[in-house]
Length: 173
Image 1 (spheres, rainbow, N blue to C red):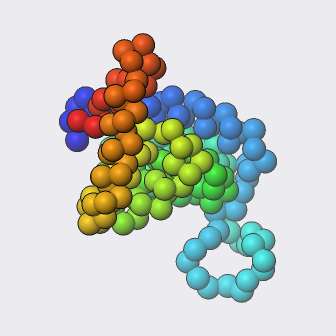
Image 2: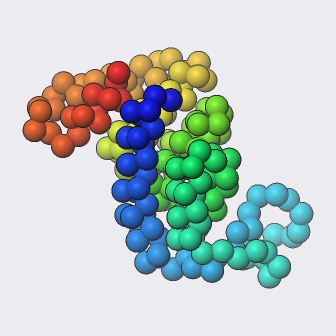
């Protein structure tokens, strides 16, 4: 990843961290069970296990941002996965989970969280850029080209005064 892209991504992550941590902190998700996935144990209709570890989603988000910014993408993915379990519609947490997987070279794992990020925040340029890259790596060239075409059209329509112009231009180059 180029230094320019890394710097730009880190700035976006810091902004996302402030927005999402506030949204997560306001949501009734503190001290939520981290149980999920893994197997074992009986059902329970989604009730958290009494013995399951507990965590604070806003703190997990902050830890994920710190891990991402320090380049520890596996640890970042672990933290963002916990956040998306309790806040599945949070576009920033989904984006950062997908971005963490992409930085580990795992486009297959990155695809779904990136699609979710776009589902909940259709204008998120960075998520679209990363999803286009994931699709290209997964041999879904038509899907990748469609996203690139959309970003190119948005960039072309965006004048120099457009707030997203620089990010759009960076996403398509």
